[in-house]
Image (cartoon, rainbow, N blue to C red; front, side, top):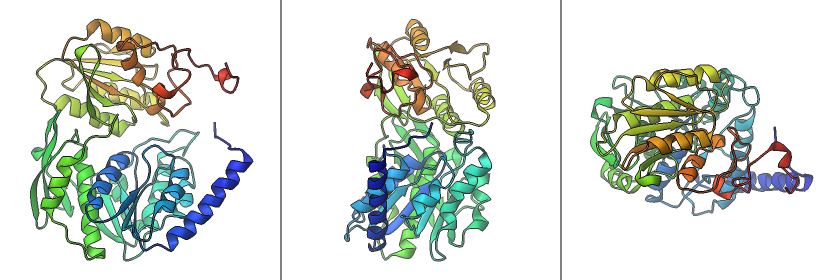
Length: 417
């Protein structure tokens, strides 16, 4: 269901967009925009942290929808702001057009394409996802820069659709300007290390960000920094980049290591889930060297997929090949399979986990935001959870939801019950 705000809110929002568009057009700030099906938030976060060491930097809020985020961020830009980083999420047709009415980027980043938002309530197909996200690099000026993930064939196919200069990043030394050899990647619960390379670059890097997929976060960030050097007279060394990288911590709920219930360790990746990010998270869990306890993956469903049954089956096929001791799935979209523990809802999942978990086990939590897998953690902590829904309509965290303890039914919205 699409939210239709009251008339007075529509007027306020339209007015804010009008002022934001004209205000931003008057500022000398370098505008950088990024989109993609996965990796946007982490890339925007790392990029903003790095750019803050160069000059005053503004970035979009972590928790706001793009429609509202863009004008709010634009109005935060001041004459002394040097960089503005806009994370542009799109899930319906013309979302990118609406964002680009305000944002006029000189640099555009596309992190990757996955079949998320391909259900009929959103973009409807993978082709529409590509078409909508592609608009970002189509809007770039001839003297701008498109920072593109070469390893994603759908992103590669976008190259003819931009007139801007292209900087490629990925794992292909022959075709990329910035690359990482996957053989150099080392994973642990302390972070990720690898060798970043370019035509005149060879640098060992370490980051507290956990997961092989973060090599793309770092490559996209460094590629953007290189494009800024070409556009502006800034001095920035790889050594400076390396030192700042060491200070950046994982965002909560995005592969963050936390003390878990029942004396466990949590690898919390519970804020988003699509086929690409779920695959990356599970492969990371598998490859991490961990000897204190067992590895247990708890998987809630992925959302907004055109072929949900097929995509969930692919995940089950994958986990059978990985070094993970136990896998617990939640919901009916995951097919039943030997050696996989299937549960109907978070209560069943928590009970199953409670019976089997031991001290120092490493528990990986993964699920789409609206599946609210954080309830499993609450139940193991002994908190009261009355809500059993597999798919929730609320984007707020469960800890802030009035239905957490008493349960949610659709008819209760607006009833005061």
